[in-house]
Image (cartoon, rainbow, N blue to C red; front, side):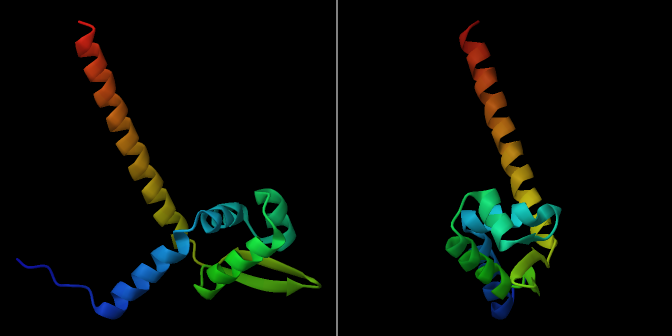
Length: 116
């Protein structure tokens, strides 16, 4: 049975989503927001990054509808708008952990054979 190809607009949306979260600073920002909303200044301090860099990446995440923002006086507060991003990150982390475990087990087995 031949699989049905994904419609091109959907392929582009998926690729765009991966491009957005493919930047380490954006992953750090999403992770920092995992426990709840934070201001730009709080994110800047938590990540040890410049305000300009944090704001730039938050703007990209906001444009991709991954974070929401609201004004509170002169502060801007950001929060996760799409918690599914964490499911994706958790899947990648679990897959990487499983792969590392399998590699370690293979190396351990190989080393044990050599010492016999």
